[in-house]
Figure 1 (cartoon, rainbow, N blue to C red):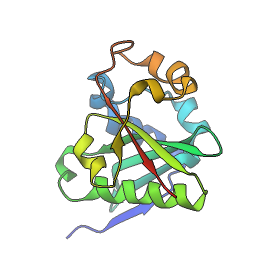
Figure 2 (cartoon, helix red, strand yellow; figure 1 turned 90 degrees about the horizontal axis):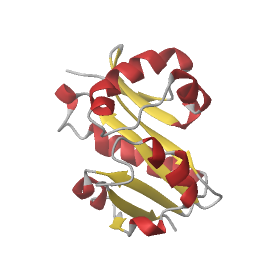
Figure 3 (tube, helix red, strand yellow; figure 1 turned 45 degrees about the horizontal axis):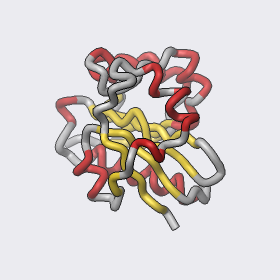
Length: 155
């Protein structure tokens, strides 16, 4: 029986977080973030562990006083299909509401997963330019983005 614990990671978890996303970074599903970038944003992450083993995480990135983004959602392969991703998304939605954000954005290949949380598909042209020039430009697929953009209104 597993005992999953959801927690806010520390800088000591960054190496394990990078190891967890390695394959998805290599295949272009998740953007690479170096240790220093992860350290400066460590408070944006929510992670989950099984015992002492890190098995997943997600981040809430804030763009403006009204808009946040769910990013870097990952669950270790052998832990998928156990509703861990759903719980991580719930954690981020709850946090976004506590911060009184009005909407959440996500770019994903898992459209149906986010639609279960009432995210709706939007045109990529509606994504703030700050996102494009800060993150998208680093992507292996830029400028030909094949991810789906979705948004959820929180109020």
